[in-house]
Image (cartoon, helix red, strand yellow):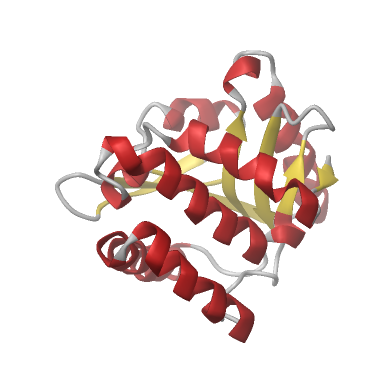
Length: 193
């Protein structure tokens, strides 16, 4: 696994957007199918800029990307530069979507604080380019971090809003510890290993 650099954000945001197009949480953020891919790209450009040091690629072929937060490095504050970047996000995704994203982020942060405590690793996102689905690239982005966490005796926490992901993560040793409902559209599954 290699960290990405700023020059790779353009490529990465496209793969994140494609991978998340049909994701329930992202459909909730961006309900209009016609503009969703464009808004997802703006959103992930912002997220990747703010999470650059936590974003990894499988290889120079960009088969997949993942965002991992290590123990005691969990983001809770926004920098001044991120606030400035956030203004452009408002113009690109719209206030309606931004309000939904902020509400969700506040709600999920509360859930996380209630369910897990330091030290823990946080698996934020794993995406695989559609051309490389089913070829083991997700495992290549998950297993090394799980091994490192296990060697240190640390917990690993993740959230998913897709029930189909729960048995996949269970194969990696995760256990479902909470099922919460953000609203009628979004079910939030929290898992720990």
